[in-house]
Length: 455
Image (cartoon, rainbow, N blue to C red; front, side):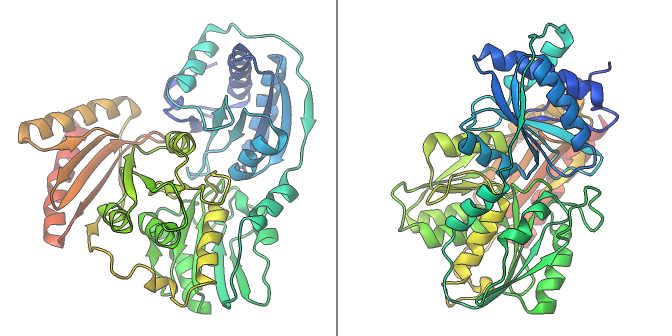
């Protein structure tokens, strides 16, 4: 068995099917997780899987490893990640594994894991599994298996947390052929006030129409076109496993998630007691500016679903999220990052306001930002590149933060360079108050990254 250490990433295990992950590796991950879980005095867990073509095979072998390790397993079957999270509460089983590679290309798959049913594993809790497998000293047992269908309860829960107004709306939703396809048609039911129009809402783990990552604008092109074609009030899109959202306004323009957070905060700021909101380092300074205007204390955090999920829970922030589309509503929701629910909050807001989606950001400060971009590099080189970027900033006398990677802080913008924790890439994003200044920052740091990649 060849075990690739690099797929044991900061927040999950993720690799390429039949290269990094196969039946045998899946079984051993099950054995290792069972061994660790029992060391925490827990012996029962939940397992779910997304609609990638390899997921069902991985699940079968993972469950065999878990039960051979002495752990009882409740199998949810094919579910979105938010459905899996909701099962933690319904079944009162506070641990589990979700088999998914989220927005990665179709050849990838992976494991999101939790020992506490609050947030997913990160750091040492992930890397420890690698060493357990290497040592091959596993717990032994004969765990039991049962099955549970969470679908109907999940759909009811979502509907119970949305309160639509009386405006007549037309909404396009894009599943991208991802796992949300298995529940979307039951959630987005047209009525006398709202007409829902599906796009790529058939489950197909080859993702034949576009990559299931709504944070990348090019993946929203079909949604934009459909919104304009049918004269819709907005469009909403989801990633492969359903825990992230993308938003398109009535004019066919993408609303970046940091700006969508402004829209939500403008709606809830005077309805919550905890006047703090969090966002990750990738978000535009416009979010910070608008939170301050609303009397909300801005809290900047590192990126990463496992980490932001923990931050949201531990501090009970009423709302917050990441630029990637993970959003956590605790103002009147259960707090899990759920793309379908986040999209419905946009629909709910539009059902009660006299403004169009394109008018909900009136009055914000103007910044010019690049999209988050990726520089492909070997995983083994990522740390050294970030270290060299820090050396460069020290030599230049720049002010920077190290919350997540290196974020150079200017009076009129920022440059952010960080390592991806889910793929072999360095990611970067720049922002400034003028386009000329943005070009200066972009040219400087893109040249630096190109040079460091070749070293």
